[in-house]
Length: 218
Ligand code: SAM
Image (cartoon, rainbow, N blue to C red; front, side, top):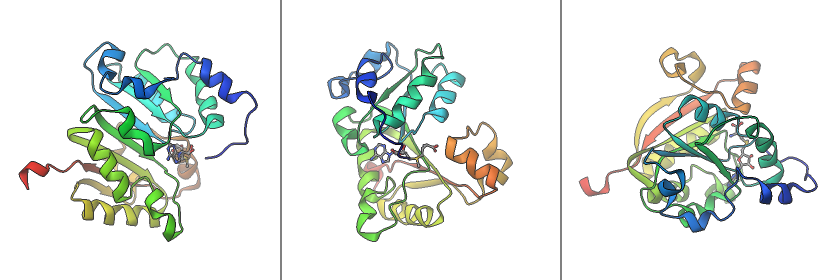
């Protein structure tokens, strides 16, 4: 998602109490920051943040951090955030490439990837958020047993992701090509903005859930 640049977006983000301004400074101190030992879950590429804000409302005992690359997109999320009385959700404007600069080993309990950019050209495969390079970054910051949950309507990206998961030795816990037809999986499913559009168009949504490998057991 890329919105037209909004004048003053950077300034508004820099002043927002909901945006972490120096996330690198909190590496290893996130539980201290939240003031509790609740699990920390992040969404990478949150867009306008509908999904993660709904999760935060539903689960007050979980800490959430929404990550978005573009200021103009994040700004839209902030407008909604300001209407909510929540202490368990913050945002940061960083590139997913920087995750290991922001989180210490094992600090994150779960990572959500929703309708990530497909980067269809082969030479851009490493930029896909489910590439083996990104899985290795997630492995660094996830706690033992930590999960990645990924939803998309892009079949090529989904099939690519399954290959990368296999190559990287992650455990595949859930794999469906038709999430919205799976009653059990739909229980508690929170729709993202893109997912709502897919649902309205009756486009199938694919989902996988994977667990970080236990390298000690190998
Ligand atoms: N997750 C939302 C949803 O499902 O409605 C938005 C999906 S949108 C297609 C993908 C989002 O990921 C965009 O807002 C884009 O700016 C963001 N994004 C793409 N690459 C990113 C990266 N490397 N780091 C952080 N965010 C990224």
